[in-house]
Amino acid sequence: MTSGQECSARPLPCGLVAPVYTMAPMVKQSDRPFRALLREHGCTLCYTEMFMADKFATCATYRRRALGDGVDKDDHPLIVQFAANDKDILLKAALEAQAMGADGIDLNLGCPQPRAREGGYGAHFAHDTGAWAKIAEMVRTCASDPELRIPIFCKIRLQPTVSATIKFASMLEDAGCALLAIHGRKLLVGKSKARDGPADLGAVAAVRSALRAMPVLSNGNVRCPADVCTNLASTRCEGIMCAEQLLKDPALFERAAAHSAKAAGSIPARLPSAEELVEEYLGLCCDFDGEDDAHCFSVWGASNGHVVREHVNRMSACVVTPDQPSAKVGSKPQEGPRPNKRPFATLVESSKDDDDATP
Ligand SMILES: Cc1cc2nc3c(=O)[nH]c(=O)nc-3n(C[C@H](O)[C@H](O)[C@H](O)COP(=O)(O)O)c2cc1C
Image (cartoon, rainbow, N blue to C red; front, top):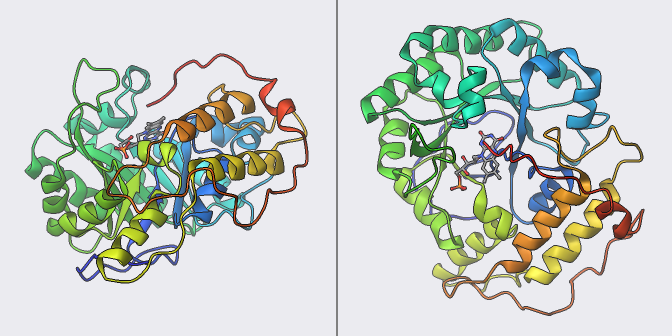
């Protein structure tokens, strides 16, 4: 896939190739069927939703709810994200993730939620300069443990200043972080969702260029396919990470490639309509639906049916903007419907209330 990215990319872990098209970690949304859908449509790296490292390290049921019987052969590379504030617990969780087939782990240093502040992890933890040495030690412990062969990544928000962000990111690099995802927004104290306003991609670019050799994924400001190319070109990062727009348009990266191809004068391939994406997703949900209650789509309390409905509603409401190579709405799927193991109705029946765990 081409992107218009012209910088010389830094070496990447996990066999990744620049530019990396990444699905961001998303509580209750990074479910297995959705990951499969994204991988079919141009995504080259997926993260899981955030798991609590202490529970993952100690509870087999939690691990099973998170990753089933282990990472499927078609679900690589997969990075398992953890909330943690203790090096030994993080290492234990990382070893369990490795045993289940994960390609890497990610330390969440960007979650702004009140529950993260209360739990002492995420963005509030990372904004406490008194905790920086502890954070560096967590990364170093995982990066240097002889038993842990998979890399550790980190996901951060911007610190209050660019120079503080560079200092923090450099510390993570020196500690052995193999890849950094930067959400180009600051922690807004007093706001629960804290995603207001545009991301500062200039700051992301400045941090990336100040780092020695650590590859960076840029996260923020993607609302249409053209934004993927603009973001990569302006930040010169090794890859891009997207969340909300992928929920609406799982073929975002495919459309971005088509956008670049069109700009370069070639004729882009036919792109899937919203209806086709919904149909494909529902087929995947039936393929991946667990046979028992322990195998759920999210450890955060959302049942399969609830997760599925949210995805379908968002995809169905997605409007193709004029700068996108047009998808043929209402056209027939290219490869026909997928065989369903169970009727879809049995998936949605078990829906429960959402407890809004979104970080
Ligand atoms: C529904 C939802 C769930 C999220 N869950 C997580 C999470 O588990 N871990 C995390 O680091 N960030 C999480 N985020 C933040 C995203 O990974 C991403 O950093 C943020 O949405 C900005 O990217 P965007 O502008 O492409 O949406 C979540 C975001 C959304 C919308």
